[in-house]
Length: 339
Image 1 (cartoon, rainbow, N blue to C red):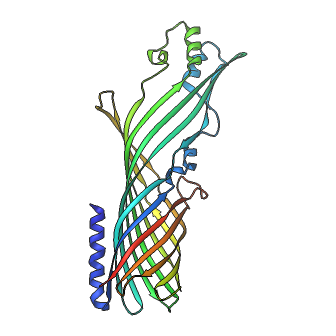
Image 2: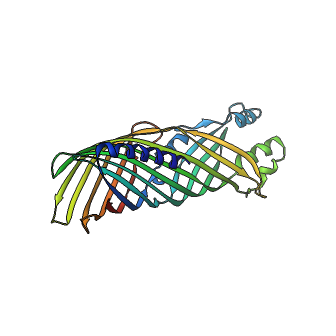
Image 3: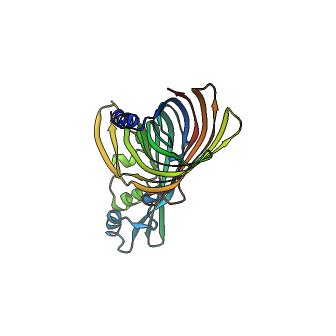
């Protein structure tokens, strides 16, 4: 898989660098528990909302056969989402090559999380004919149960300036593979269609007579990738001979390419009856990447590293507003064994 290919390639580069630099090697198994607020971002829902009422041309043409001044307008009434942050328990490791002043680190982590997402869209229609006004409302609901596999790969270079400060830069790659079942249901009134059928003396189509249509069931899947360039500084604060506190302050510029959402529609017998692919716009983003933690020396060759890290992605392009930032944050623990 892509994660393994990338990991192998970067490890190969680091192994090639290490002998030339006569570096010491540090192996660090790691565990992290991260929160991702992507499901809580809702500003992109505005892309599906028409700001002004629109004329329902097809049904307006029908009503105007009886009343030339009659017309029907529809409007979006808004949308909302009920969900929670996705949590990712992740495991992995890091390999570090330490030279006189320079340090190269490659980190790879993998984990899975899941979340339930309930999205609702509301709309209304109004028929105007003489002094008559007839209203209809419709509510579309989508209930998702999404599973996400997450892979993080990071390469950093650090140059120690003195015992208390260092500068560094790096590259980071994140991959989210999402998928799961979705139930879509539509509830709507049909007052306008009843009125039109009545004045025309026709029968309502069967699908309009059934007030409780069968929910549609589908499976959705997509893959999101994020490429980041990072640079910043690290400050070290020795507490005693065994304990050192540190702070990482970075700025990042990130790019998430366009991606495709694939929806596979099933019938009541779970047979595939259709596949729909929708292209979603990517985004450029930037923001701070900060971490604070401590390193405890257990033996001459073994230490414990604990840190809290938060990464903020403020959109500079794409469907989300600048204030609707994506935030990844959580704790990271690891043991570092100096070989």
